[in-house]
Image 1 (tube, rainbow, N blue to C red):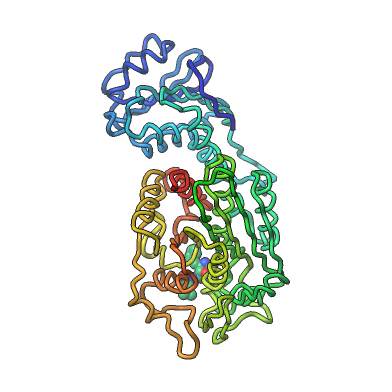
Image 2 (cartoon, rainbow, N blue to C red):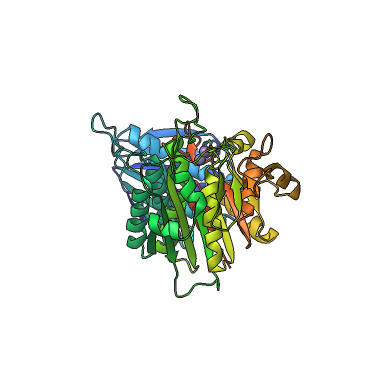
Length: 481
Ligand code: BES
Ligand code: MN
Ligand code: ZN
């Protein structure tokens, strides 16, 4: 998709005009070729007011947004999403978007970003395995007419982030017979290298040498070897002295292992269980392409989780890389096993901050549904707050759960240091408490089980992989330090 900023609206193309009570004059002045017989009135600017106007050589979509103070980035995103849908339905290849009179809007920056990201996010399709009756979107070119300061730079930057979120979507939507631990690592290598990121893949032998007991235990049922991928983006002008480390859960398919998930049912969408890793890849690609001045390292432990002949077994005691001994009582609580090792590995960087992303618990879906990612944090209140605010701005909301000491009781083991399940109640928190045992630095844990993969579209977030987390982390890191 091509996105361009233009000075005027051309005839012959579909145009979306976003109206509010206060921008009518700016629209009239900025679009002198509005249909002559069309009289735009205050009513046309009402929230929800939407009409089409067709002339001999032009098709217009007019969407109202109410008063200027009702114009929010999310409202604009939704309307662009709707227009992209209309464009494709009517087989248009071009769409012009008019957003004028916004120079003094308090969220002007986010409005400009919405113009850059939404056409890409909304036009997304995953068609690589369709060989017949492909209903390919027709929309290819976007022209933006806007008076927001610095729009050109903001649109370009947001477009890069949206493309990276689509890369994350692609990786998650790919089936598990294509995305294995090895091919996931190869994808990280390919996309990382292209963005100027250093990528190193540790293979089974090195993982054994490092004694990553958690990752190796989960991998025991698999016919394929595990991988541990390290991505490093270190710009010369990095503002942070010590790196920010991003850790992503890379379970390329989660059958549950010997504690097998029921099917049909909870196993059906478990190719999504590497969404954390895919989000880290997308985020690193985005920040590198946008040349953000932050030193960031990505760690991706990866394997499938299966009931093979040598599969790890309930009652096993596993020695993790940190030396901590874990009693396995459910092989389906595998995410924390591989993340425990990755979080321990992160210590070698003496990180300033570590953020992990994982489709970790069904309990996060019970608690928050698909409207928010669960956050647990040992970082400063101020840093935690900044992540939550980035979530509000990008409409990738996070809701914080506590990491109180009381919950440690639930993961006490009779015979080992801890066990890998926390019993009834607070399943998302006890998973977080498990992970906390492998950290000794400021840390934020994002449980994306409810937000990474959807059963049906919600607003502009598509069915299946959403790419949630890439926009959030890019926004957070863009304002880092
Ligand atoms: N990958 C699942 C969690 C999940 C559930 C992700 C739904 C996305 C949607 C995870 O590995 C898992 O199986 N968790 C168990 C933990 C339990 C055994 C303590 C769960 O949530 O049931
Ligand atoms: Mn599981
Ligand atoms: Zn899992």
